[in-house]
Image 1 (cartoon, rainbow, N blue to C red):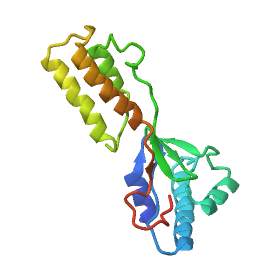
Image 2: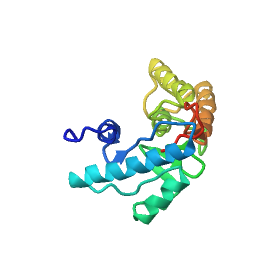
Image 3: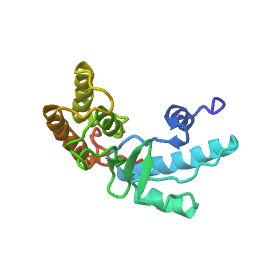
Length: 193
């Protein structure tokens, strides 16, 4: 990447995470300009990485015009819901949801909730951007509370603690269904990824 003195090479270097390149193009009031920038990036990124011996594949975008070009190159991911860094990106409607890993559900047996169950359910929520922090932090504070009460791993929580956890647990489960517009922090609706 160092031998390329281009914006695309810099973009690749700054936005590659293990095997995902997560990036976009800058917004413009002109949708055609954004689409052309995305197409140019797609082509240049493919060239740069191909020269280095890598094959970028499974491209995804929220722009129908860019999707058609990628599809014609046989590089398009045919899924409209893409797993991306532990989240799910719904490309057609351009929103993000959370992976619904199920932790140890305390709804199955609300009378026998242990510190182990609490920790397992709390840790099952993967939120790399901290978007659900207002809910998730409640679970973390509750876990600290369990430590201060000196609860053991497999001891049933007191009825008061169990009731408190059931409320937090319901909020965690509900938070998993949150849908966030990917362009939440973007001023222009014409942003293309």
